[in-house]
Length: 140
Image (spheres, one colour):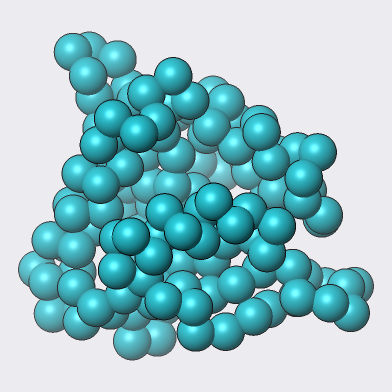
């Protein structure tokens, strides 16, 4: 799973500042995330092709490390994972999904907007005096 996230996030490297927190993930930290929240996995045959982490954050179910294998992006895997996240939110009685994406990744903003997300805030990473991420939310 760690390699899937690193592969899916690799294109961001030269485009975003600061670097993605995905680069700090380890097998142990991935396991800790999975144990403290919910990990959704997508398989094609027996191959892991997508994942995302979920955890409750205030009134929303927060989506983190949403990744789809680069060779299978635009094949509907991300939409199926997002639907599974919506289903999990409904199961928990949570009415909102939330995620963050980097300011520079405008194609991600558009993809999430097509899934019903709207921009609700901008945030800055520590040490930056400009927005580095946007917060997007969607009803379930």
